[in-house]
Length: 396
Image (tube, helix red, strand yellow):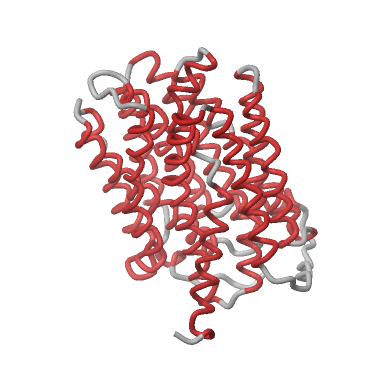
């Protein structure tokens, strides 16, 4: 292979690795939830909400960075965000109580979301349409990989060396992400801000009048509600009787995300060929098929159920991300920020609502809640107009 032919592959691999290092902290702590619950003497609902409090920061920063992105140097903003992310990650090793732990998780979410949003903007502005599609697929795949590898690292390190060392390792990964951005993303001239005369509130109001966008925001909310609700509290089911997995074995369960790393990059092509609505219905239906398996008292069917749920929800999320860019008639950055805010608020709601269901009524009630969220997402998909999904976005 010639150096010229290898260059696109190296760039794709680099973008995927940046995506991985940006989001590796987001869900890693879910693999050590039982250990954290014992450390802070917290109920499953309380520790689940604390660990997923990062989604508060993700939601807030996604919207703020989208509106202020015209004034931020993309490359500098990405590496600075990842470098600053190492600070709250390190401080988690010293968190004296659950309130401090929760606050630090929120700060982590702020920096992760800032890096994520700015990377999306950088790809859109410095790649051709074809290059951007491939780079976005690589970035999303890196994010999916972080769900698996982050949990594996957390489970292995916390079991072998303790919770404090675990957070030091993740802080080192944050700094590695900042260094990778510095050496791999080229310095480019700042992109001129578009002449936008409408206020931020007017632009938000304009998006809120778009039925397709509203439906997409709701789908994103429901998808992460279901995903976090299931993958947070299933840890307590797997660690308890009759399955009774050790912390190390609990981390290995997350190999269920391997199929999602293969299927998620295909979402854009499938939606373009078959349309957004059928793609949503198929992916959400696949996720729903896995739910009854989560109720069986045996590890194998639970693993299969988690695999189906992961493939379906990741596919739906990737489809929604692409659809928002096509459905927005103007200021796509703000529309994407609003979508991400709804998406991550859904995750927080899933942790809170399904945590209470789990504590008070047990795992079957939590699984029913996941099913309701998937059904609501499928209903919202019915509001999407196929014509809108196929229209190329106008320049803004």
